[in-house]
Amino acid sequence: QWKSLFDCGTYFPEVKNHPEKYLQKCPNSVKKWLKQLKSAGKILLLITSSHSDYCRLLCEYILGNDFEEYFDVVITNALKPGFFSHTPNQRPFRTLENDEEQETLLSLDKPGWYSQGNAIHLYELLKKMTGKLDPKVVYFGDSMHSDIFPARHYSNWETVFILEELLGDKVMVPTETESEPLEKKGKYEGYQPKIPYSVSEQWGSFFVDRLPGLENAEETLVRTWSCKCISTYSTIAIPSLEAIADLPLDYRFTRFSSNSSATAGYYPSPPRALLPSEESVTMK
Image 1 (cartoon, rainbow, N blue to C red):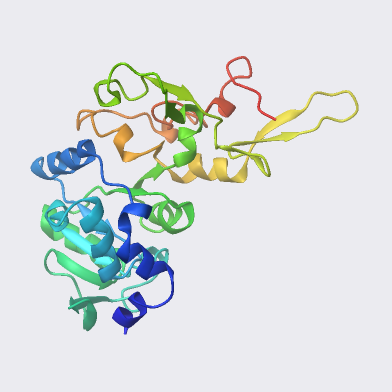
Image 2 (cartoon, helix red, strand yellow):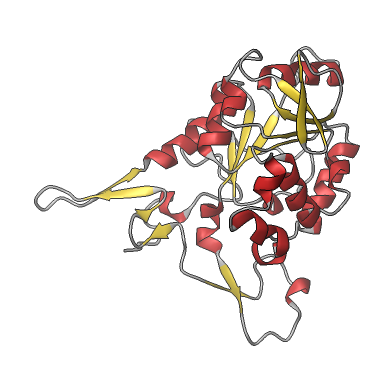
């Protein structure tokens, strides 16, 4: 029945008919990085709450028609965060045929494309595939609610939070008087700063709140609830996959937990709002 829904309404038909208006192609550096990981013997997983036909539409446009070759296991309709919190009985895996869910599986025996499911059975499959009793999983996600918190809290996986607010200090726009093509320049060369979008005119900074002082006391800066969640449940936080794609595969990141620092796990650098006041920029 999903296929008929896919063609109903306004959102899905619009994205389906005009993907170039809403989607960005995956940078070649990220494609290369995925291939390097696989060549190095890593098992690559794609876990999404999107249904299989919508996932295929997005991935074919973003990664190419061969996108399945990048991943060993693809899981659609994962219904996160329940994927991590539910038991195998509550949320079993199902096979797929022509994007329609089929039989319920009592376990996962081999790589492939599956629907729904749970992290417990997935981890059992990873044990079989790696031959290890305790394989290490590094999970990348851009939602604290659906990705980072449940993956860490329920599965104790390492978590990499993709946080576009980290682009706030370095959101750039091309200069209009360039003599050299931008593609020949470094990642931030030839660009001019734009107002950080980690600071909302309505809500203020994503990372810090300013509490007014009593009487003549100075205002106090405190980390927001969202900011505290980042350092509590993320191993590291990055602005995008592109930010790390060119690093060696054995690059050693500094974790948030390494020295109990609220800023240690931000790569390539912490947001300005969390730096000492003399280094940070005050934005009203």
